[in-house]
Image 1 (cartoon, helix red, strand yellow):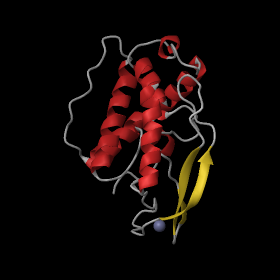
Image 2 (cartoon, rainbow, N blue to C red):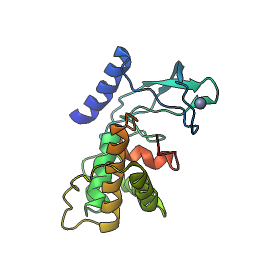
Image 3 (tube, helix red, strand yellow):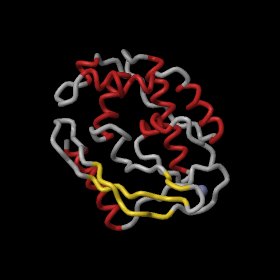
Length: 192
Ligand SMILES: [Zn+2]
């Protein structure tokens, strides 16, 4: 739980210092810098024990030409109240061969949550979409995470590719937050 609280605190510290990475306008070819326009609050943010960590203020951004630019803190996933680091741990556990029950052990969210999160990773076309992004960005071949012996091979491979894609985007100064958040933004422009 300490890591989960630290992730939110790290975000709030960056917000206070004004060092949050700014989003780019998602419109292909637009070079305008989106401007910050106020805040909204994410009210319901929980750690894996179900304890509240919010409300978490989230800046809104606008491109002067193209309007609202979607953005969310790296410590959170869109439409998910559990902090991203806890969701990642559960998804990694499941992809690594744990049952949904084992992957939720000790947490307040239930097996249905884990299945719902995993279903985004397992959705048809996701692996191909991630591979296209990797092909476009051509990151240095990174060492693959060590695959547990009982891993679900397809899910593990997709999760691993998703992490490499997030790292490649980060290398290009495109803030993506949690690699899993890419699953909510699909299909977003991946070239930059
Ligand atoms: Zn724009």
